[in-house]
Each structure stands twice: as C-alpha cells, then as structure tokens.
Amino acid sequence: MYGSTNLSEEDAKRMNTTVEDPEKLEAFETRIAQGEKIEPGDWMPVEYRKQLIRMIEQHAHSEIVGALPEGTWITRAPNFRRKLALIAKVQDEIGHGQLLYSAAETLGKTREQMLDDLLNGKSKYSNVFNYPAKTWADVAVIGFLVDGAAIVNQVINSKGSYGPYCRALERICYEESFHLKQGHDNVVYLATGSKKQRDILQDAINRWYRPLLHFFGPPDKMSAHSEKLMKWKVKLASNDDMRNQFLDQYVPKIWELGLTFPDPNLKKNDDGVWEFSDPDWSEFKRVINGDGPCNAERIEVRRYAEEAGRWVRNALIKKEEKYVMPLA
Amino acid sequence: MVSLSNHELKKKIFMSDKVVTNSLDPRIKRLDLKKMDEGIEQTNSHLITWEVFHQDKRGKQVVHVGVVHASTPEMALVMAKEVFGRRGKTTNLWVTKTSDVYTFSPDDEEIFETTPEKLFRDPAYYKVRDRIEKFQKENNITT
Image (cartoon, rainbow over all chains, first blue to last red):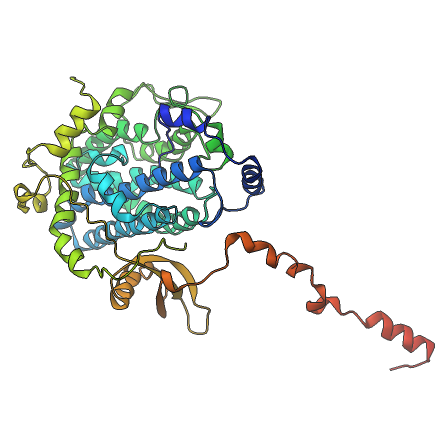
C-alpha cells in the first residue's frame, strides 16, 4: 500500500557522511541518471541498499497489516457480490506483501528478519492501518481513498531505480486499480442510497480525512531531506507533491456526490495547490511510533499468527536446505 | 495527551500483558490471544525460495515473474498459483529452486556489449539491389 521515503534525522545525517568508492559511485549514478535500473547483484552504495530495504520492508508490512482492518468486514459484508470483491482485495494485499518481501530480500534481509522486526517494533508500517474500520462505509472509504492514496504513491515509486521493486510495483498497481474501482463503486452506492447509508459514509469520510492527509508523511518543510535519495531515484516526489496530487484527483470525486470533508479550509488555489488546515502532525507521530487506536491490536494479531503457525513452519523447514537470496 | 518515550511505547505495545478484548473484529474476539508467549522466538531458519515462471498462453514463452517461499516443489507451485495466477490467463507455472539457477555475474555484462554491433548477423545488413541494377544496366538485361 505504501512505501515511506521519510528519513529519520540520523539517517539523513549518515546519508551525507558515508564515504563510497568514488569510481563505483560515479558509474552507479551515471547509470541511474541514464534511466537504467539497478539489479540485485550490482554494486550499490551502502545507504542506497539500507534505505531501499527500509522502504520496501515498510511497504510490505503495510500490505499485510493493511489487510486486517478490511478483513474485519469479510464476515459481515452486506451481500455476496461485495463479499467476493472484499475477499479478493484482501487476498491481493497479502499477495502484494509476498511480492514486496521478496523484492526486499534481494537486497539481503530475510523475510523472517523483516517479520520479526515488525513484531519487535523495529520497523514501521503505514499510519492509516492503525485506525479502526467501524462500519461497512469504512471499507468503502478504505477501498476508494486509502487505496487511491496508495496508488498515487506506488505509481510514482514504480519509476524508481531498483529493478525488483519497480517490477513488484507494476504488478501491484495493476491489481490495485481493481481495488480503487470497487471502492469507488461501493462509495457511490452508499452515497446514492438511503439517508442512513449516506450518514455512515459521511461519518467514515470525516474520520479518515486526517489520517489520509498524514499518509504521505510530514510537510516538506518539516521533514528531513536527502538530495541523494532523489538523485538515486529512491524518492521520486516530495510528500507535499504527492499529497497535492491525491487531493487533486480525489476531493472532487467526493464533492460531486454532495459529500464533504471536515475541513472548512480545504480548497484549491488558482496555482493548482490545495490548501487545508493543519492536520495535527503530532497525532501522525504518535500513531507511527506505536500509539494509535489500533496499533496494539494489529501487532498482537500478527504475533498470534506468527506463533500459532510456528509449529507448521518448523515442521516444513528442511535443515539441510541452504537459504540463498532470491534472484529477482 | 500524555506522550511516551519510544522505549515506554514499545514496552506498552510489545511487552505488555494487556490483551485486546475490545476489537471490532469478531474473528479476533474469538482468538485466545492470552495464550501467546511473550517475546519472539528467533528460529534463524528460513524456507528456501523458488523462482517462478509463468506462461499465459499455449505457444507463448514461459517468463520469469518472481519468487515464492516454500519447502517443497509442490508447495512452491501452490504458492506460485496464489501469488502469480490470480489475474488474467495462465496455462502453466514453473518453479525452480533459486539455488539451482546459474547466472553470469552482473560485472560481466560487458561480454555482451559488442553483440549489437555485429551487423553481419542482421538481415538488413545484406543489400544487393543496387548491385543487381547496375549489373543489368551494363549488360542490357531487361526483365
């Protein structure tokens, strides 16, 4: 669903101090500048590898944790058609997790290490999945707006420099376009339905508005920058640019249904830039660092799956088989 | 809002015996989350990976599409079907252990560098029409 390119202060500092072989670095940067992709066995700067692992891993975690709030509603989908679509969507999210873990693995971190780091809190996932899906309308809003936001991010990232990540993202974007369409379909049905249906939809939009603004990360003026990540095509657009693109694409699609966002200052300026009220970035920080409404539940469920399934994995593992990094 | 340090937060979430009971998810309410052990057992062993190849149509090439984790080829095929066969058409999938695939080192890419320059391997390199026409003119051959 989401690959965060936000740097911590320490990472940003290290990015500018790590010394690399100048000749190899130049060849690497020339290759990227020419639009060529980097493949797993290639020489790459230590920080390039590190930041990519962090980003792809977070993205993978977001996929498998992201399946949880929506999965909540599979048993209670309002009809068979919606249930089929939701099962397919949730299965896709898990499949995307698999694709992304494999892409990150080509950089040298095993899937098990990544899953352990998710459980021990070392690695993060997207803020949006730490909010509850209270009603069926949340499923509609997640499918339309959260996936819409994710697609903005993923289409941009798929133009990046690391081959395996780009390939995974292309497949993911293709599949997510179905998520978006079925989410829109669901939103439109609720919006054009009974008063009660419109009310729960409006309520869900009100609750998701701020997390969606948070989704793209802190404003550019507040976040640690790295020219290098841009140069290396790990980060391809700024947080503010992606957020603006999202608002531009999706706000009108909510407004045209006679629905609103809970922000009197939300408007598009003549220069094409969207304005909105301060969405409280301290809340974003709290949620990202583990203190959102559902963080504890998400991690506990994930840990339950890990522990309940351990005997199966242990029975399957053949000690004589040697693990090697996947090729692509 | 009370703000917690990172360490306190981790403690609260990852090491507490607080169990989620107010979940909105009926499936989660049914789980006996209390039974869980604390901490995470590091197994240090991994399922091996398999490279997956996909054929979308009879008569077409079988193309590499990605990777799955599995303990046996049969399980690898099941995983491959779920991950790479969910959309569009599939006629068959192949899997092979990653460790069984041999490749050139990426540093050896230059051994292929001169191939595009070998124009004598290209059909368009062979142009004889001018020569034929010149010959016909000189020898008064008409057709």
